[in-house]
Image (cartoon, rainbow, N blue to C red; front, top):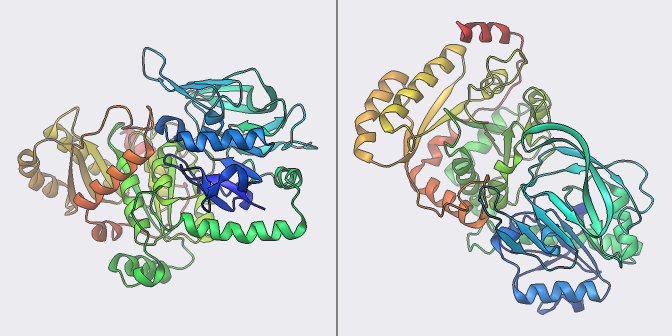
Length: 512
């Protein structure tokens, strides 16, 4: 039996494992092994990502998807894949006018802006192929910017939401529908297959999979994963080195030797923190992740706080999994406490972990709740920081003063700042004039200038209509050109959770 996965620019075929169901890649030409997809496939899964924003569903692929539906084949669209199946999506979250991107119209559903990044528990309502006999909660997570649904189809799943558009709420919202024939299904719940074995069984039962078929599907899925993990991103022509080619690379050797020396602590870990929002943390983290993955390293990308959308561009490049510890909890925001996260590290096969901070590294430090800032996370677990400051708003001189001030506070608290990046530098002469001053005040030699990169306004940040392809490849190229990765990885340390016992003193010191 053949279960297809659309593999087109903007899609996230590694974001979840999809119950280890996919066996065949379906590219933009709509072919499977040189034959039309509707003649080959028993079912099709359309993953999340930025497929709608990227407009990467070709006419040939659209025609094949429609024919699969007409022939009664099972189609499941997840998040952006759900949007592909709908009528249109308004992607103009920061636009005064709607910006409508058309879907295929297989589901009579429209989408508009609504941000949700929760781990969720869904409830099944009405009958459907996937939710048949589901009595318990449906577990997974949301990761979307356009999740408000206007729906004229049969609703099959509601998600209990705790936080929407950065505000706490407590309500159920429709997150899954089906067509009248029941074979076209859309859901906003990522991990719906990974976390709900009964749904996988229902899927396999509907397509008539025998026990031998299921064994074959699992084996073919391993081939599928091997194939998608041969390249960075989608059809980028950037190949990932296999182990025999990368094993002697100095960066790979250093990282693996360090992890071996400190076995049991977890992989080398580095936090990308900043002096404020809009610093370029996501861009830099994405570029680092892509370049390390290109060397054949397994790279985890985590986020402090709940906004896991910031990790998506990096995971798009690496084909990485959104782990259940992908969001580090601060206060009541996020998914998992740092102590548990590090325990998960120890059982993982990651070589390197990148943690992206939230806003400024110091924001939340005066909250009575512990931890409530990136600084506290770093301090608790011996995680060094590369500090990023953007010069586009305050200028190079003011950014230099700002980053020195942050360094001094972090240093007195006992947090290791091992690198500084001034981002969006518009004048290298001014930067060079400030360089010795920054070094003298911080004793840090690893100080990097990244120039302002010209990108289209739309597609430049996960907050707006992002093109994962353009954003990710640009980030990779920029980091490769301006960041010495060999020196950067030497900043990282193997984490070790030490607890929060002294944090009242830290907060008291900071207040003073």
